[in-house]
Image (cartoon, rainbow, N blue to C red; front, side, top):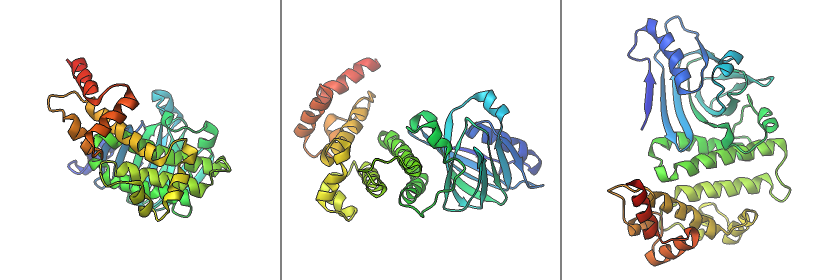
Length: 320
């Protein structure tokens, strides 16, 4: 479900105050100064993808500031990854200033002061998530705030494409896949930050890590497809089956096992929804790419210590 905050129906004189409140409600408390005598209509459309808040913003020229006073007032620890579509953004945080252009994205941290000036009408998509979801050090994080990233490097190009697709399809993301897609977004960002800091392990060059993340993202987007196989995954990425297996060596699990684990977890979550209209075990298995019900029951029991039917029945009893 989308949450829409818009000034379109308001009089010009009322738009500035409403917009100040709307921006702070949608994100974190911020000071907003509009640079138009007669503010144009503006809107924020927000959707939730797991723990990731995806917001599309369209508005006129303005400056947004996160001051020490605001930080002291709420103390929220969130990160914002912002992909700019139109206009330019002059960003400042952690002693750096940068100009972000259309097609580029940048990062800001709510725990420290920052400012963002947008001198023209603009549109952007902002991805907000808890700081705790990103497994990087504060030092590494501070080194990349207010830094423009585009498609000039392998990992930033991968993340840029992922953000664009996720922003466009946020409303259609299945609930069962939402948390995983949010986690993939954070994994891509963490990988980019680590690469920028030069901390990727020697045996895992950036290009290999980027390909692995691209493959995982593809697998997660096609989990429900019964025709998704290692052969089709390798073909979609123009690599050999042998190379696909090699990509997963550093994961401590085979590609086939990783795919099976993701499908099983999606099934488990769906079976745990103990509603009166809950689907049958066979329907759940088929819906997540398991063609053989007996095989599904066997691997589910091995993974969770109970049969899928028993797991669903227990979930129904708990909900009463």
